[in-house]
Every structure is written in structure tokens, then in C-alpha cells.
Image (cartoon, rainbow, N blue to C red):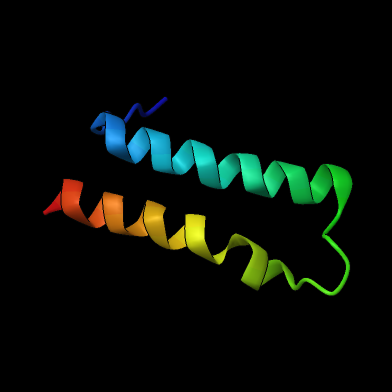
Length: 55
């Protein structure tokens, strides 16, 4: 098993993205919404936090 440790900001951003993904899988999308559009804000926040952490 490999365990990676990141700062809290990366964890929080990853969790928010995961929760959005989980919601889409569980409940579907709001009417007229596209998956990428719905997930984009938290996806970008996660990627930005990860970039900052990695340097």
C-alpha cells in the first residue's frame, strides 16, 4: 500500500470534489446540467491545491 500525505487544503479540495462526484452518481445531475460543467469548479480547486502542494 502507498500512502500519500498532503496539506489540509488538498484534502479539503479533494473531499469537495469527491462529494460532488458521489452526488452525481447517486442522484444524477440537475436538469440541463452537463457533468463537466457541474464538477468543474471543485475539480479546478483540487488541481490548484495539489499543484501548490507539489510545488
